[in-house]
Every structure is written in structure tokens, then in C-alpha cells.
Length: 255
Image (cartoon, rainbow, N blue to C red):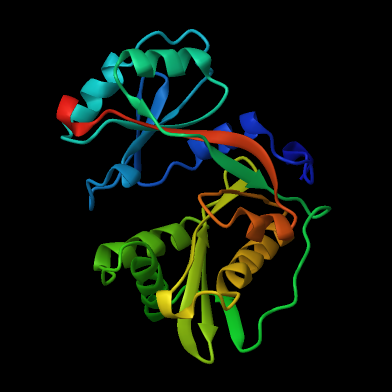
């Protein structure tokens, strides 16, 4: 435990290292980057690069762009700021940098457990039928499309690697889900927390986040997450901002 300095709150450097070490899919190394590639999807959010080392002297990203092109993928990066030289290099290469996304983290000292909503049961799941139910919830929440076998296979791989999948049921019906990534460098990212459209505003997302957070804290793993919306939900649980994450994409028209 001491090597992770737990329960110290993660900082931006720790978040960057954890993201790099836990890159999903099939990670490959291209210069100072780790590329995570999903053989079942060409979606940019499943195929992207993460800085592999300190980038203070980085001046170009040509090799990275060529690597993405060789796989017929849209060049895309995720990185924690500050990284001024990387940002300059990306802008020079005509990448579009999206507004920063807050990254929040929590420790046992800051975590606050709310009263669970009535009728909601949340548990960590590993069986195929339960993973399929979790994948269905996520697909309905994020894409309004049925879950595919590839979606279920991703969850199976995540569990096999040491990650967690949480499934929330309301009165016995699958209604919410979320995941935590396999621990890396003493940290794990909570992601894909969602409730089905017909079950929103019932406390399901909060219940899922609480279950995953508690499980990680019990394992002495530092939880962190990206906040795209509903920041107050996580702040009520004791999460605090520790970093900013930037997504950078080279538009397909220039590839």
C-alpha cells in the first residue's frame, strides 16, 4: 500500500500515468505515445493515443498521424494538462483540441456515502447474462442502439483483467450500470456510469458510482473519473477535481 501513497489524493501526473498504464484494447507504442486500438470498432473514442512519457521537448506528431493513417483511423489523443509543447505541436498539425474535461478523484477521507434509493439493488457482475444486461443499459444510454456481442466481449475482457462491472436493478429490472478499469499504478478509472432513459432521475447513477467507488477503496485503489456532466453528483460523494483532460482529434477531412 505504501508504494501507492494511499490515501493521498491523485494529482495530474498520477492521472496521466494511470491512464497510460491502463490503456484498453491492444496497446502499441509509437514514439512517446501508447496507442490503444479496438479491433472490433473504428470509433475514435475506442482508438486513441496517450502520452507515454514526459513531453516537454515534443515538437511534432508526424509519426503518430502516420500510424493512425496506416490503420485507416482518425488520429486522436487524450492527455492531461499542462502539456504546452504537445498542445503547440497538435495545433501546428491542425488537430482540433476540445475544451478541457475535469478529472475528479476521491479518497477514504473525502468519500461520503449517501442513503441508497429505495428499490435499487447494485452488485458487481461477472456472468455473461449479467454483463449483457449491463451492456444493454450502456448502449441504450449512450447510443440508443442494441448491445452487440463485441460490447459484451469488452466487458468480459475488462473483468478478466481485474476491472469491475456494476449492474443496478430497480425492482428487479436492469436499469443502470458502470465500470471501473483494471487497476494500474494503484489507481482505477470509473467510467460509463449510466441509467436507461426510462429510469433516469431515480438515483441509479449515484448508486452505481457508490458501489464502484466503495469496491476500489476497499481494495486500496484510488478511484478517479472524467466528468462530462452531472459533476455535482460526484462532488456530493466527496470527489474533488485533480486534473484537466483534453481530447485532440485530426478531422477526417485532413487524414
